[in-house]
Length: 246
Length: 105
Image (cartoon, rainbow over all chains, first blue to last red; front, side, top):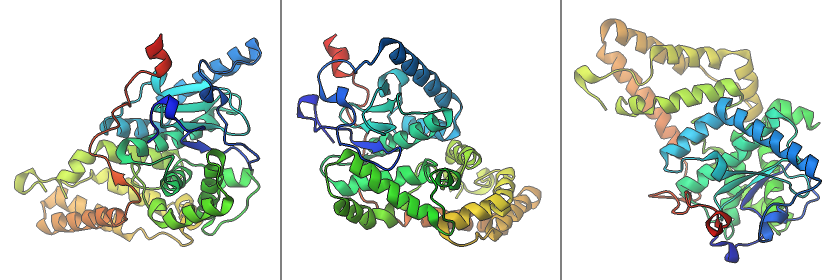
């Protein structure tokens, strides 16, 4: 994982893409400079930041995807503190958020997150990266296959590629389209945070796809909507009984 | 596995019923086709539900065996993946450390 800030490579460990990209890798400019996050006009900063904090609070308290991930991370020794491990900031480009492995922090792009549902999906996506960081030796900056794997998992398990979301993106497809979406979005996310060619990103995703698409931890299934996520959370809470009786 | 008088079904019977009902729903057929390109099969959830109720009523050893076998198969199916990365023995050492600017303050 990335070391201390003065050794840190530019950009986040893993990110989420909002739309088709024309983005540079330096999506979190305030994280490259020393000091505090950038501030735009004072009034819009307060509005964006407050809204981001409010939506984040509602997400962590009510969203079943997020509640399961937070429980799983606590179980793995990485209890999440909202003030320490989340940061609402302005970001360049179209990126919605990112996970910064060098600071163990999830960045939420307050200027790009549109509404509560979007916030929940971004938090879920980034928590999957954080969960992977917690449970495995993920070489975020030195192994593009590791990054690809976490991006495949995040696109697969966060709801990014639900049928409804793809229709809203005007990407129509039904039979096995979910997998096409996961592959494409993983590639976009890699390109948003790494200065590599599309071919290298595609190769990495294709090499790890089968393994990482079928790794559903901590959900135990692909949660297609909140009902599946609630069932997955119920199973997680029941795991002691489950494993002691099989 | 807990043996003898201490054994209970790995999930409450209501959970097997809920999973069977969810599996058979139209939405699940749609989601499954969207993800896997084929329709789901839900028979195993019904068999597990039947075994669970059989255990509750009669403490049938056949029901216990059937449930254990079914759930072990699910676990094995989930674990047959070769992971891309090595799992940690302990969480990252710096997860809980304060941020650098907080330390400087």
